[in-house]
Image (tube, rainbow, N blue to C red; front, side):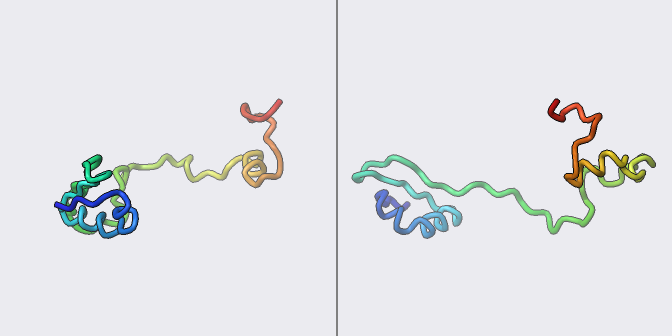
Length: 92
């Protein structure tokens, strides 16, 4: 187990983080008194590469209205050319 003082950790942080990733424990000291412990996080076991299109909602049918064109007033607003008159969030 490493027991560096804070100054040494500041100078070599990447090295101590790498040690923690390897499973080593780093006990950080201030004036040779332990004040913190640096340990690596447990990583979930990877099951292999994710499949493209493997979202949780994959295979959910979209209603036909999803593909309808947007209303012209909304297109103008989205283009930043003016606020819609029926926008409830528009400033009055």
